[in-house]
Image (cartoon, rainbow, N blue to C red; front, side, top):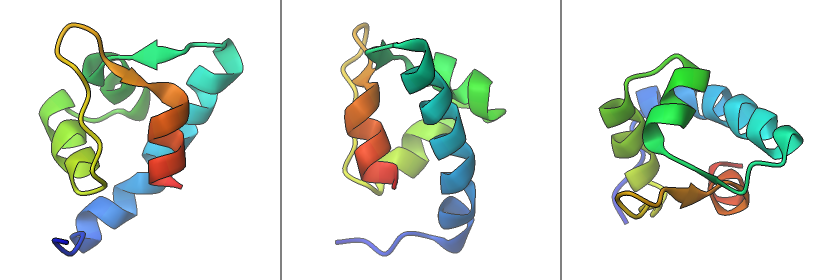
Length: 73
């Protein structure tokens, strides 16, 4: 497994807060664009960061919020 860069680790709490907000809204799926906007990040950066955790959404469908949250925690 590729080591997670320190900059990515530093951004994980920001992603977790955004995911918690989506969980609170009852949102089951999210796109990288939606999650990035909530986290104040670029969608490409967010996808790259989450890829270190083994998370891969489906283009046009998005990712399951609960699954992402579990991976980022």
